[in-house]
Length: 222
Image 1 (cartoon, rainbow, N blue to C red):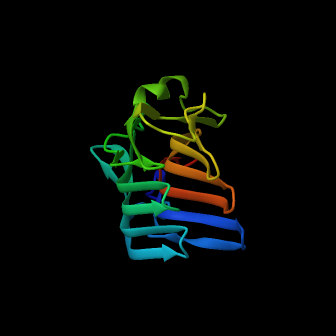
Image 2: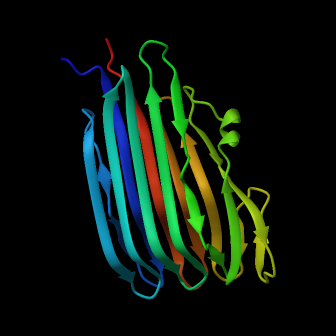
């Protein structure tokens, strides 16, 4: 076979599962994924609304995988506009962007989260400034064991009542649930970024993920 690299790239705008007051799986919105041969995939969704629990105005995702200059490159992006989760978590824009490059000559892997950001993120009505800090990756390099962490650094959270910033960097909102920002999972051959993960834990219980991207791959054995 001519193929020397097994590409990995996927992205989605939103998904989730509600278990209270009823049980329902929120179907994956605007999914994109590549075969191991690479290529291009894109998807979009508009005017999504699930009950009065989760909604967005529009969303799209793109994944690509190609060989350029002797290196193997993958890119995954997921963009969500006009997000609203139970009127507690809102954002004008949420973008997950994850790019990876593998050099077969040096065996070096380079990953970039540049471009991942929030615009006008609000929690319980209060504006929250979040910086995606790639420097946190230095303590979570790719290895045989999976690593888990967060790239989200909160620069400001003022005037909140019933909102607690936990040691992990997550937010706990009274009678709503826990909100995780910029979560990453890193394994030997891929990395994943979820810009928002919400554990709903009150009158409405369940899990919601918003703007999720994953990239990289591995050389073909032999």
